[in-house]
Length: 589
Figure 1 (cartoon, rainbow, N blue to C red):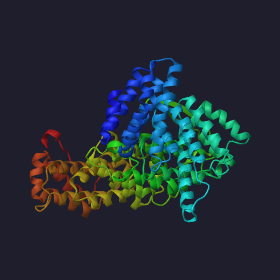
Figure 2 (cartoon, rainbow, N blue to C red):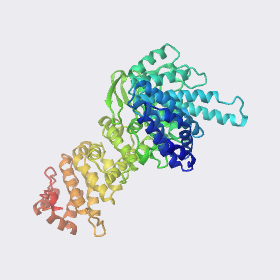
Figure 3 (cartoon, rainbow, N blue to C red):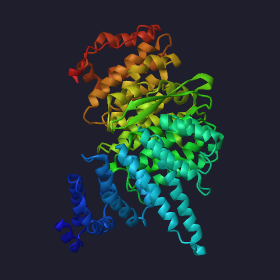
Figure 4 (cartoon, helix red, strand yellow):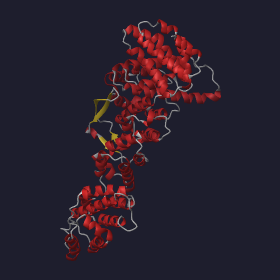
């Protein structure tokens, strides 16, 4: 350890200090059966800890805490030596980190944040216990006298700190390991005995004792039922506000821990039912602001490289979906494996006794938020925006029930077009098979389709996408009524992209061909609905006379007989057998 003593003298360089800490912890782990030398060097390393934490990045702090918390719980030694190593070496380091950073974040909050991000149960339990010790120390160190002008500010800060603790402890109650849930429950029960704590009284009655046992056994599956209890309703809105406080904190050393804790709270709030957590409250008090944080490039809630936790995204998307769980709905817990080494939970919701329904009307701003999420997708591999859009397409826009009950029946034409506009942006920017299939499954009306063809007539990529939709859904559109308005719009598009002053981008021939195919499919699907003689004559004359289409006829092998038939049909008034034969393939384009 002579190198560490030397580094203490040269410790103006924080990088050297951080290396000394890592060296010390790794050495302690390698020599866990003989920690005497490490104990002698402890003062030197604690000096390095103070220096490193003063200027270290959030990620470096999390790494140091994680190493100190896991080293003593994963060493290849006896349980007794593990505990000695932790008490004599790692615990002083963790306590020093907490006290050094106390001006930025409450030590109790810091340790709970990092605990929420770890998957190693013994280390998580140690951090939960350490957070309680830090909280007790902070209470005993609080001055008895305060200046009046600072009293309100200090009270606000204490309220926020308590809120942070509540969110992280609830998040840990949903952990997959029962030892972690037991430690988190002990902390929750201890807090609930404090008359000034927001959780006061929640576990001090018979129902609280009943839920305490269930939480240890089942974890997150018990939380919705707990929130439904009358004793819990008094702080439901406050709980949602606490999630926003966590998401918008000025300093977030462990974003992944914050995101996972928030996702547990929001997921449990949804399943608790509409009486305890109304959808409007979940959106206005929490979902809206947290989503804004995720979409902001300046957000402190984002993990390195703008990665966002999938569980949080799904919790927010469920709010946007407008799902309402009635209070009498039965909830069954299903345990699934998680990629981060923990078990994640999904829930099967029974539709008996009212089951699940959708909000009608949607809370203000939710549809605009959906459009904003889709429109934020870019082609720079921004995992944050792409993840949000991907989950939204999977959980909302691919849902048959949502498309029928909400998109088709509840949303206005303007709102539908806004969502479709964002969807088209996704398909132009980051197309996937999943997104394409979801788009083709949207129940657009004839009026929607015509409006989209008009709005995007100068966007070649959007036109190609809309032609795919029309070809795939011509029968669905025809079931609504005559397709004359759609045909008029299609021929208008065809004329625009074929005029001498029209677009000349690459792929325009493909779009022309797609438009012709769309016209053919609409004629076929139109069935018994007749097209007026005037309109049909206008369409056929356009195909025959336009110079662009003379070339196209040769390119797509459109026979003269087919064109003659199109001219002849209006004269005799027979529209049933109209068709435009084409023998072209993709190789012709």
